[in-house]
Length: 353
Ligand SMILES: C=CC1=C(C)c2cc3[nH]c(cc4nc(cc5[nH]c(cc1n2)c(C)c5CCC(=O)O)C(CCC(=O)O)=C4C)c(C)c3C=C
Ligand SMILES: [Fe+2]
Ligand SMILES: [Fe+2]
Image (cartoon, helix red, strand yellow):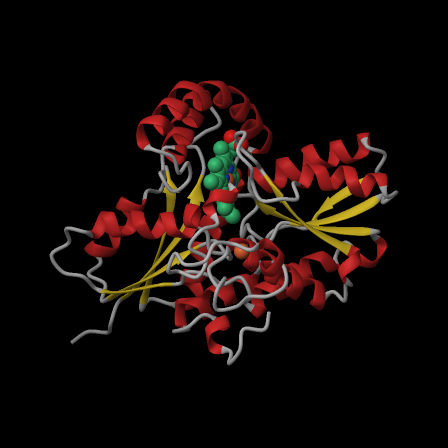
């Protein structure tokens, strides 16, 4: 019998094929028609997404995508995801086949799974590239993969990394990336995570018994909130802050990229900018630890939009700490996620983060 062949499937969110309006429309339609993203009845979602959100949003989103699109490498999200795939493949060697897929658009999950099937792999390790668990991201990737493989005649051994919000190596890379900006020279620090509609914070213990109790989730991960996105965002923050010796008054956790009129997780980053500017803070260092690759939401929303807004409010500068991208230590973390049977938080005796 030949050596075992192990398949690895990295999955990130997705990006349009190009910054043209038709490609952005196609991307937004697939993304927002996902029932885990816009979690309302299908007929209303279809009417809202196809009739209102996409026609009105796509031309503006296409302009923003043009701002971040590189002539040679295209979308930063796809570029860094491909680098992660390539570098992880180099680290793991030829016993492994590392595939990359995007939840929306290309390379598609169906095509990546088909390639793994054709390679006759014995196992598939699925790594959704979202440190903190959310139904709209990791949950959606798992649902989509399950749908795609439903009719396979034979299943290889399949395993999933469902969260890695407290991975020490990941925390180290964010802290190390901050060092190059001399963090001690800033007068406040933001940890700006992608937001979610509040109504999606149900089932935070996995049984449907508990919903998010934000006041508690800000403090600790427990048995009752171990799948809560908010609790995990605060836990990631505490660990990075500890690595950088930041005390609790020096930083604020906030949530960006709100869509629509329903309440999303608060505080909103745009409100926090106003608040810190009013408190006379001038120099902000901003971390975005929900993203493992730089993308529209980091490069443009934080690096350009929030930076401009903050200056208009009287601030001096906003510095974005780049994401994990192709940092060698991040690729080493991915390698550990390939090997580890249990996530770090399950290996600890008590959940103390
Ligand atoms: C942490 C990861 C993410 C969560 C959680 C998430 C939830 C979420 N997003 C939208 C709507 C949009 N998000 C958009 C872009 C975008 N979102 C993420 C990640 C998460 N989203 C990333 C990495 C990106 C950037 C992709 C890129 O190509 O660079 C967009 C598109 C851009 C725009 O038009 O503004 C939308 C729309 C919802 C509704 C949601 C939760 C329910
Ligand atoms: Fe998003
Ligand atoms: Fe919570």
